Image (cartoon, rainbow, N blue to C red; front, side, top):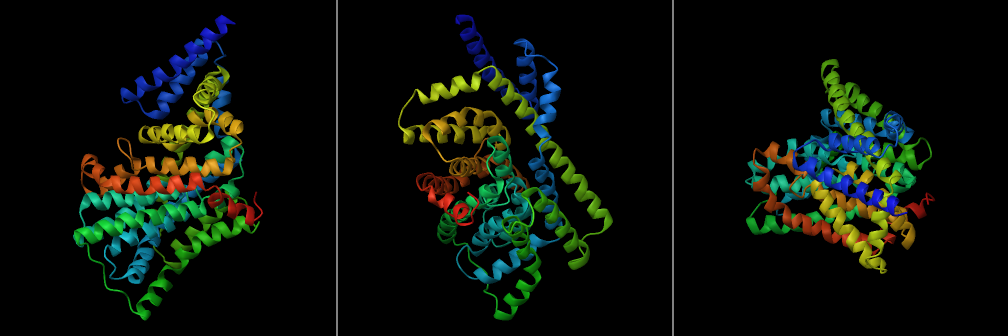
Length: 435
């Protein structure tokens, strides 16, 4: 018994110290997770042949097929000019409100998130269109980069979310139900960002644009119509029982191809080839992390590391509110350092026993965790979304870091409301008979 205890303690120590060390040395996260997993499997004699079988099993799952297709669909629709058309429409509608372009940025980020499902992709698509336009209107570059990085993070909360697909696979929770659960919290997150955006814009004198005439708005609506329909096609098909979430991703790809080649005619074979290459690279990166993080999680669970950490966390308090706050603090700090995919695979095996112990609803907890991770996408030092937008703005990550604080606070309040009010997440899945 004592020997087994020492084994687990040794495994726990090695498991996390090695990970921290490799991150400190600048090793890519996927490589760090995979190399530690292989070392632990070898060191504790779990059998090296399990590496290949677990690597394959980690990605050979039907729901995960949705990830590369949603990535491809988002890239095609962005290349079609959908984001520019949405911005034009929103700008004409919002008009001369102080900080009009800032409000437009948040609204379009939330809407385009309903197509891409990826925070960095959303931030890149919106940043490429809006940052130059906002700078021409005398918006500060650090404000632009911080705002669009924060707005892009809502893409992993509003459906269809790649993050929800991964959470559903790991916890065996219904992906369509998760999509529905994320609707209102995603909208709340977007609205929470508009408040500081408006206040800062008014304080700094960021003026709005001319409100469009009825004729101009009608024309802009006509131009943006096919883009506006895209989320309805994707989500309407899922909730109408026409196709699954994975099939919806494929439908989204063909819908984008139809827009690019037939409706807008902004795609040709050469540009389509480049889209395919870019999406293949992005998908490969995501699925490599999924496979290696899954191997890391399997090794930790097999050695009892995850169970031991869950027990330790439960021993800190018997109050579910206290434990929930502690869990959210841990996730928030992890989100500042790691990508969401790795966090799901590393932390969910620890958190699932805690969820079961307190009877937490997996749909509600999935939304809370994902909203927390969305904040991490624009919170330094890692801040993947902020890295994208600062590159587009031509400024350093350090310069934009302070500008993110109001948006971190705003989305933190949205997270608190979502955590304290489970009905915000659960009402829609129950109303639609998904849960």
